[in-house]
Structure formats: structure tokens, C-alpha cells
Amino acid sequence: MRVAIGADHAGFPLKDVVATLLRALGHEVIDLGTYDNASPVDYPDYAESVAEAVVSGKAERGIVLCGSGVGAAVAANKVPGARASVCHDTYTAHQGVEHDDMNILCLGARVIGAELAKEVVTSFLTATFDGEARHQRRVEKVRAIEQKHFKP
Image (cartoon, rainbow, N blue to C red; front, side, top):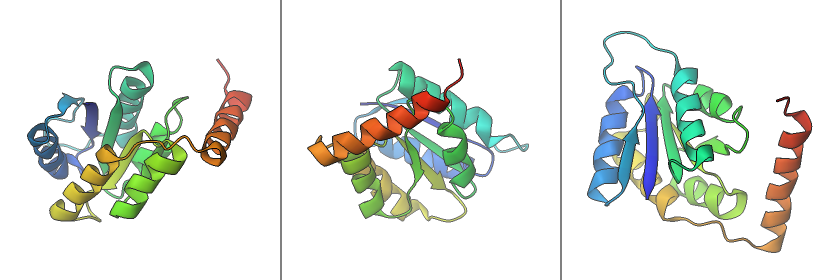
């Protein structure tokens, strides 16, 4: 699977851990930065880049890391077609994909440890949208809300 990954300066140290895991699991990593944590950078820039990569089809899934994960999720969800959420446990990571067709995982590097982050990422990547009628109906309603408020 092609996975786009991005992080601000706070998420940078965990980004390398996650990217290493992705490669070890056989995934193609599209690293959209930041490439060091020498100076502060803004999480919306990286969240947008990852979301655009996923929505355009350049990546099948995305992972964005910042201090808490919250800002990354808020920013990524501004890109039409992005369905991003903060997940710091394995249940939420797989359930978000299975029921909500989540396509971007957001992690808070100041909240979650490296080992748990690896488990959460693995749970996210191994899950698939189940397509059950009630879940499909709900995802379609989310898309309708997005289209209603989208201003080209």
C-alpha cells in the first residue's frame, strides 16, 4: 500500500519510527516532510499535503503527526474527501476504517509512545471498510455534508 506521511516539528521524531515500520511491513512511503525538527513548522501544511495525496489517489492512506494529533486532524479534514481522525488506541484505528472509511490517521507524538503508535498504525493499515449498508449510508451522509458546504 502507498502511504503518505507528514509531520510538523513536534511529530517529526515519531514520524521516523512510523516510516520505518511502514517500510518493514512492505508499504511504499511517500514522505511529505518535515525532514528535521531544527525549527518550528506549521502542522496545517503537512496535513494538507497528506490529505491531498490521499484524495488524489497518489496514496491509499495517510498518516499525519503533530503534538496532539488534533490540529492535524482538523486541518486534514478541510480537504474534501479526507476522513481523518486522531486515534491513540487500536480499536479506534481499525473501527474508524471499518465503519467510517477513515483514510487518514492522525497521531499525537506528545501523547502516544512509539510502541503503541506502531500497534495503532498496524491496526489502521490492516483494516478495510466493511461496506455494510448502515456504514455506507452514514459515509454518504458525511459526503453530502461536505458537498453542501464545499465552495469551489
